[in-house]
Length: 571
Image 1: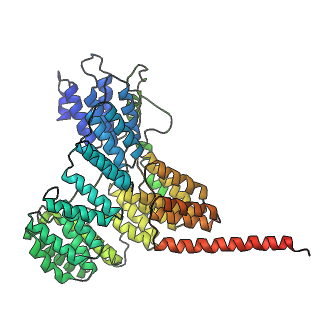
Image 2 (image 1 turned 180 degrees about the horizontal axis):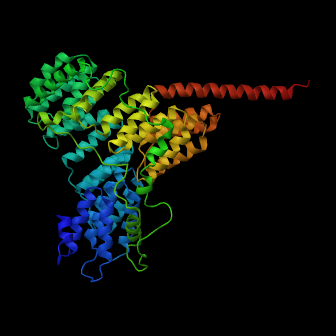
């Protein structure tokens, strides 16, 4: 439709038409088309159309969607100084993007600016900030923000309480989360199927299968649909405890009985397929043929860099940039897009959508991933690979989660060549890499002792608009520490804190260990004190690390005592 209208004689888009198209192309991740249309609007000789606030909001949303939050923030600052003042939609999208990429400092800055300019934050804004604080392990700040939300009369939604319960559970505050869940149930409000699913998943993780099944029964009695996410958690827990006979109990609790029946039929068909030998591939042939070496990973990750990196290198433009423009940064991006032919990028920060029950047709890749998780959790890598092969041959297209699961197991077992082959196939299938993929890559490089390559991958990730989560920070700190690159470790730790992510017990344990082994005992003790001052509860790994630190301190004291005794010896 867009192409036909463009070719039609006598037809021209007005501002509204341009905005609709820019918004649509932005939703599809096609920044090149977005900025090409923006440039057309700016260069319109007749002056019939020009970018308005809706245009800028659509472009900011597109930049945020593709992880280019830094560019979006610059455009926002330009808007503040122009005639197109930001509105509620601008603030909401920016805060959501900053929270999703752990830029809590920027999120707070935009939030404060929003309030100072007379906009009252709504529930959606507070939900984004709460979610961001919990993901950054800032539990105290999240609880204070929730109190502020209530004091200002902003009504919490069911999703608000889901964020609170999930965030408390994820940050080791299970008792507070269960108390809130029970209070909400007594009040009979702000509880839905997702709330129950969050608590069921936690009970399954803790091994409390009986309590999880009872909660599912209560969930069904209250009229909430038990969806595929909840059933997946229960199936994995049932398999982990070897209690497949409990699936009969599960069927009794499901209001929509067809769902569990379909799952069990799928399971029976899957097990039958697993018993049959593969038909298309020869025995002993590699499932993931390796192309190149795992150490070539940097070149793999930078294949798209020439087209995705729009901020590096010399600036080129199709036309000169207007010195009087109210949005020079946006003009620069549009000209760079025009010169590079940017269309898509390798990294995507898009969040996974919750799987809802849609009948037997929804069990394709979702159920493959479920049983992949079961087999890989039990260490049955060969069965997982066979399952992957069967359904790949059957035409089921794997997603990022499928590849990441297989690659993670290869890395943990030290099969780096196979992990590289999985990554290569993932790229050939045009399956976008996400933050979990990068975590696996850096973990593998760290185990190989290639901290230099891990740093190069990190640089590539950040240039492509990516961001680091706490898992990646911990992995990088461990890899650099084992390589003896202590200065880079300390620099990364400061970057982690400045980006709004609070260190957890794994971070502190790693810092204490690498500094102890490097002979920097004062620094190791400093991180121990920092850990205790931050209220981070030590675990058994901390005890082991402190034992090593204590032995190193005693050894150092003994050496000093020996040196002093030698000096005092008159002979």
